[in-house]
Length: 284
Image (tube, rainbow, N blue to C red):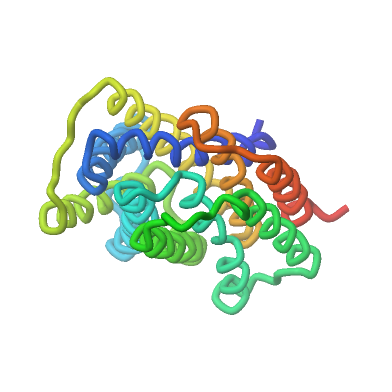
């Protein structure tokens, strides 16, 4: 079953870009994320108590976990959701954030002392090429610059969080770690929403369904799988899975949001898949 975790992660993580587009049609980006992570934090707290895990841990571990949560949930997801609110497509947002493996592989060597092999770099190049093909012919003149900047902030946030998680917060159980991450993010996002946006949430049917999906399938499902993969593997190899997210998102956005999908998108998906296989496969 654990062999399927990478594929399950990619599917649910990609779906977050599509459901996020639907959410921001009924709510401001930071208010919706704060709402989401207050619920997620409560869920992980109940999960930790049910399995009788130690919740009150060393303050330094709580701080380190909170930092991961702020970078992942606030800078990464906050940047993505904000980019949606100013008109950036799910596909393009996923493409920019999908460059995360490049940054992670570059930084994981000097920071985490991980060795990035030539084979991994070849896989990275394939993944980068496949990702670029997804929207290479789709970029027009109406791309919101503010949305691109927000997605770049999200890219930096995701990269920093991945490295920080691997370096500092692997000593906590997944449920306790996720609880502190979600709680810190919820509080941080509430402050951002209060002071920097016109906060609102309309509980439409589409909002309820999309938010429920993100809470259950993405926060409890995909994010927990991601933390597990980072914990048992290297940050560089795990991050290479993100190359599959943009092309998968492109297909989902075509099906759900009617965003255009071309032959180069299909080719990009295949090339990115080959790249991920090369970069993450076990040595024989």
